[in-house]
Length: 327
Ligand SMILES: [Zn+2]
Image 1 (cartoon, rainbow, N blue to C red):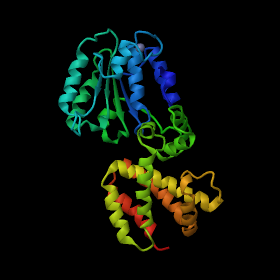
Image 2: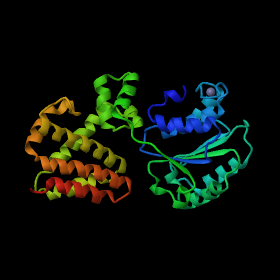
Image 3: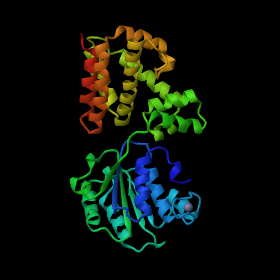
Image 4: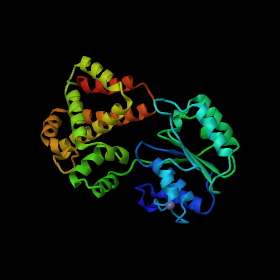
C-alpha cells in the first residue's frame, strides 16, 4: 500500500503529503466532496503514514500500526461516527474525543481524530467541538469529513482548512473496476452509472442497477404529455428517499444525454446505456431536442438543489412537471 495506490485526487494527496513530510499539517481539516470517492481512505492513509513503523515517507499498510488503524484498533487514531442505530454524533461523543485528545500520545506521534460524517454532529456537538478547534491540544490533527460544508456551523467551518474533492473521472473508475476483475463493458457501465463514486461502483451489482434502471424507465415512460397526476405521484414516491433520489438524478442525466446524443448525431458509440439502443432510438425520435436540453439542465440543477437540502419533493415535482408539460 502507499499514497501512490490511492485512486485519483493527485493534487490533494500531493499537497497533504508535502505538508505532512515538512511538518506543516494544519491542526484541523475538512475534507469535502461527494460520497464514495476516497475522502476517508485518504484520512486513514494520513493516519497510517503518521504511525507506520516501517516507512518514514509513506505507509506500508501491513505493519501493526497500519493494520490497527485500518481496523479501528489504534490507541492514537480515532474515528468518530454515529453510534450504531443512531442518526447523529452527540455531544457526549465529542466530549469523550476531547478528553482522549488531551491525553498523551501512546506512540509519541501525533494523535489523529477523524469525524465522519462531520455534518451529523448535532448543534450542541459542533459547539462542543469548537473549543478544541479554538485551542487545539498539542500534536493532534482533526479531520472532518463531509459531502458538503452546508451542515456545519460557520464558526466550525472558519476554523478548519477545507480541502475539496471532486468526483473521480469515469475513466479512473473504469480502470479501477477492471483491475478488480470486472469486464471492460461492465466496468464502463458501472462507472457511468455511479458518476465517479468508487465506493458506489464497487458495492453495487450490475444486475441490481439494471433492475433499478427498469423501475426508473417505467416511471419516466409514465410521464406522458399532460399527465400531471403521474408527475405528482412519481415525484412523491421517488423523493421519499434521499440517496435513491440522487442516484436517480445521476442516471436520468445520463439517460437524457443519451437521448440527446442519439437525436443529434445518430451515432451509437457515445451512448452509455448501450443495451438500450432500441428504446433510445424510439424515445429520442419522439422527444423534441429543446425539451431534452431543458430536462438535462433541470436534472443537473435538481441534483445540486437536493444536495443543498432544498425540499426533495418540490425539486422532483418541478422536473417531472416539465417532462409532462404540453409543448
Ligand atoms: Zn505501516
